[in-house]
Image 1: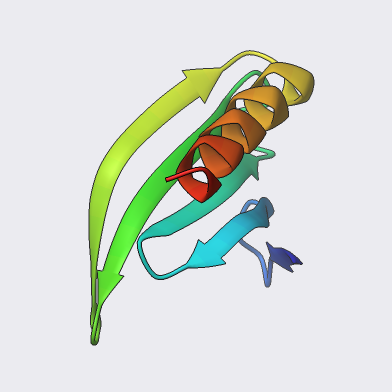
Image 2: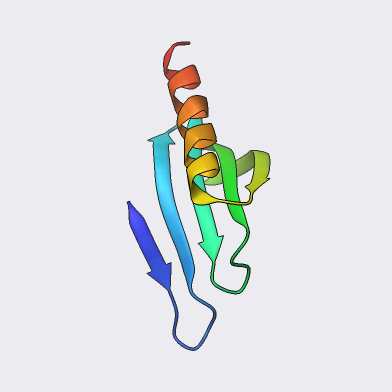
Length: 77
């Protein structure tokens, strides 16, 4: 899933890599920080989300490889 927000604000690109309850992973990129790609991992419980980790990368390819590595690592459990 890809979403972009704007309305006068800096545009943020968000890609949902995994939407599983025990492993919610998203890739975030903001136009205001062109060299930063952020991979965030969350766990969800009812209405709450808890951030487990946040990793920063300098390009999209590295960030996607890392995010997919987490996703496939979680699926093997």
